[in-house]
Image (cartoon, rainbow, N blue to C red; front, side, top):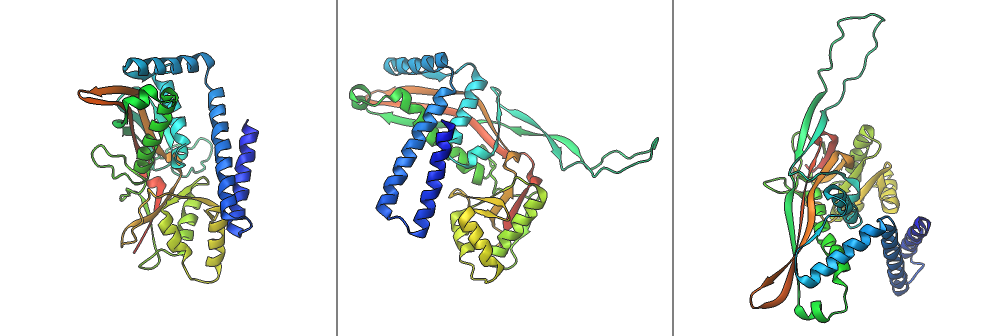
Length: 349
């Protein structure tokens, strides 16, 4: 099945190229795109089902179905709290691309402490045999970063008619529905959370520890600025990613500088990379070009930690005089940059 999934991905990329060069009409392209997306979604579901133990899967579905009929709370515990949380992470990772890149920490506790080396070990030197008085490393420091998961709640009202007379299998649809909702909240927070109060500390919430890369001139960022950011982060790590808003991407593509800039623009259009560094476009990133604002953030996404705790609970709630049933889902999560100085921000002037 993995080979079939790879084949569909290749067909999707081929279709994208045909759309760009105009070799396929819009209606035909739309039809093929929907067909391929449907095939991919069905195949991913089969692969996911194949990875779940048969007994566990059947028991979970039966429990959900029974709980819906009895109008009582549903607790999806799997084989244990931590295992269930991992399954949640996999489900969300298929929803938003940024969720595939960050590092997850799992636990049933209210907070998670992450050991952190900061900033780095000093460059080793060589010493003669039997040498003494070698100075200790005063550059590295071992500290901790704490992630405290907070409750995220989503409520779905379902009418009595839909619940009683409808043909939809709500027991199988609810995890997918709530997965979309929580994925939106988590992805938005990871990218642009302000870190205040109970909010997620997002990538674009930069501070004095973030490595700032200033644009060469005031106003809109240019292609040369993005190249400079890519080269800076590429010198730092081989597996970095640049995150930016599609509006900033469009401004950079409108840069009328001739020469090498045109070659970089072509690379960015064709491969969504700059100097080999992948560029991730997301509407969650800020689009302001005011002076001092970050327009792109680059770094190794595994240096961003997201903590998930407790179980997923879906609770049906009835109200007096209301025929609707309100399904309330609760998930505990929070995220932060593990090492602020491992990230670079392109800042306007």
